[in-house]
Length: 174
Image (tube, rainbow, N blue to C red; front, side, top):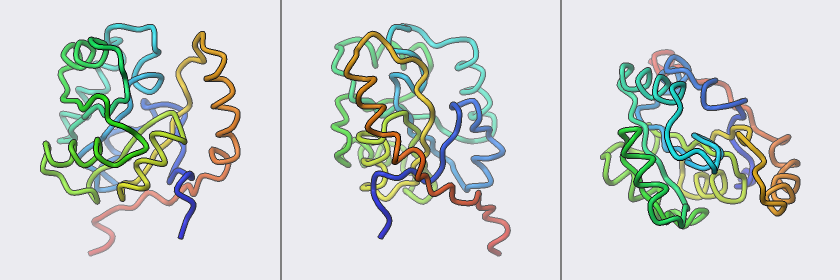
């Protein structure tokens, strides 16, 4: 059994995840962390680049869904409303409840979903525990919290050990 702290693949950012790559993986649902994955902690609204990426996903029949541990009362709901995506907040990652709720709401099975996040000990560990493919991205910003720097440093060996599984093309399996 593979280590649950090792992501399936590592990407520079969400923008490296094109609809073409996701379709080749058979993905119809992108579960995504909010803070430091979709936007830096301090950004209260989606950037034009994020809005464009979300539109590309939609045009390709891929749903974006935020799964966040955010405890700020309005951060996740307000950001997701501006982005026009559904969300689960207080997801309890690395627990599996938030992931299961997102899958239940969308009706999409786990084999057609991926989780994208910037943290090994929440996003990746939780996704792997939930039976999802896990895609790690580089944190958008280090932020002002010195403990965040320590956490990212502790995650380095797991980032470097990424499985970097090949991108599967479901059509090739037929």
